[in-house]
Length: 447
Image (cartoon, rainbow, N blue to C red; front, side):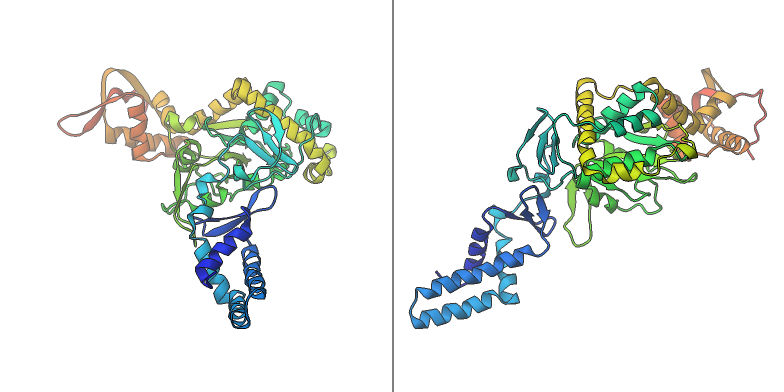
């Protein structure tokens, strides 16, 4: 065999025995640990050092001159230069390359500590490297296990059985890799209501499938560049964000990106530019209603508010409960089965919205709709009516200042009237909306 870096690369690939792959987009090796594919943290160099041993063994069968040359080459193979050359050439071999879209491609498989759960067939199966799974929940599947403490906790913080079943189905849907419901779940309510304990329990159980995201993931930013904070969420399924301030605005474009099922592009540091389809569902916990500026149905239908309005008295708070739910490994198996029951609920019925969630969400959107309030309270909608666009917007700004409502942008104002099917015309002096006018019975100051 010829002593060369190229042959070393071939020998290195033989050492992998199918248990190492290279992802050009991530510029990283991945190794199979028996349960999932994990980014390499230096193991590739340990494997590469074995190649020197191949040449050592080859030398034993050769004459003195050849043996001397092979042993010299073996020493080179263990050098940093030799190792880097070998690894670099190996990673260029198409047979051991994998792209990011091949990882975690089955949305209905959940990887656990003791095997995989096929949520399509609802059965437990052995680990399989050919699924190319990179995530794992921190829980073991135990058939028939229940956690009555968890169930009792849910009954305390969500008294409505209809709402509890909805939340169970929503969590079940969230642990799949599907995003076809196009929803962001907003847990709203003042403190001491159990929502943080609820979310942290799910996060701890789901292991690397879950993430506690930056608090500004959903918020409008001043810069308009790519949202590279999404990169770390690739392949996740349950993403929690917390506490938006009273003045914070949700970034409606980001919400649509995360829930539309369309691919997003990111350009993270030290990686190639990537495109991937979000697989996570976002759960936002907040004490304040987040603000939205859009009035279109496309954003409204994506936001679901789940009320957490039970206030647990301080003398009845179980200070050990959160620790138990977070750290009791055996108890997680029962919670996992509760989640899997939720998967089945969702598959059977979809997200059946309870009246409590529907009403709460409607009230939230109504509160956000300053334009709708203005039209209802300050305008007359009638056939043949007409008003100049600038006049109407000035009146709207004055109204918002009078009643202390958030002023939407002029573009948002125009989109609202277009979405409500008001037509536009131009008269001799200005552009006008047709079908609406200001109520001249009400004094409106536009200055």
